[in-house]
Image 1 (cartoon, one colour):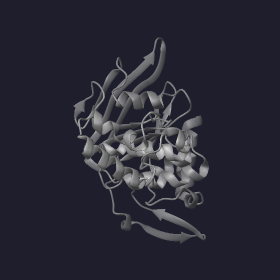
Image 2 (tube, one colour):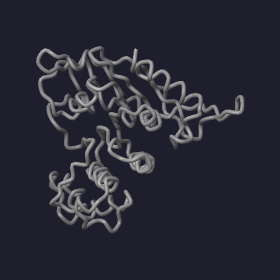
Image 3 (cartoon, rainbow, N blue to C red):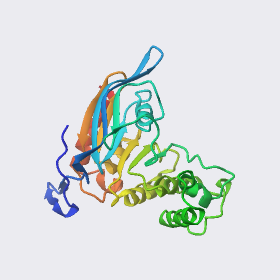
Image 4 (cartoon, helix red, strand yellow):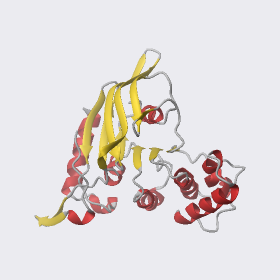
Length: 279
């Protein structure tokens, strides 16, 4: 499905119809001339069980895509394939024009759990990816401290995992993921373990941190509202049947999920996604 060229957030028009807010816009901040991720004819399974079937998906540079689907449809499997973690698939996945053969240094990956190392401080956890990439100690600690400040954790640099709340741990994990300055960010249910209030606080913060760097983001989520409120495009995977819906989200940014519930465009997209999920 083609995505229209990106527009500035000021290029949208708001009109009131039947006392409701109707929004018209093109939200993707994407460069269609540059396909960051290309998935071509991918099949993958375990033994005799087929998980992914004939997946074709092209994601422009700078686009935020949400993958949704019922449990067992292969969302996380597809994310891991893009991350270069699983061998033995049929088909091809290319990132920035290069066929992947293993993990990339410029891909950031965040799992559902924070996966912080308990023997490292918050600062050292954020610096870990930079350490693996050979960045000098002074430079990596300075960058890690800056990222902790950006996620609102000034003063928590010396705390260990057991001294941090779940929300603070996720902030550290976000900082660690983005500190390596990835051009591709893969997120596997990063907000699932958070309470509703913390989730509502962190989602827009993460979007803010991702904007401006031309980063491409793929989010796996079970939450339809989360997918629509965060992504430029929602892709629905069906178990054993591949992609059943590829839906652009034409709602302008910035978005607040609490403000979107009654917007007709939001409700329409949500209806389409639910139909694709349960058909």
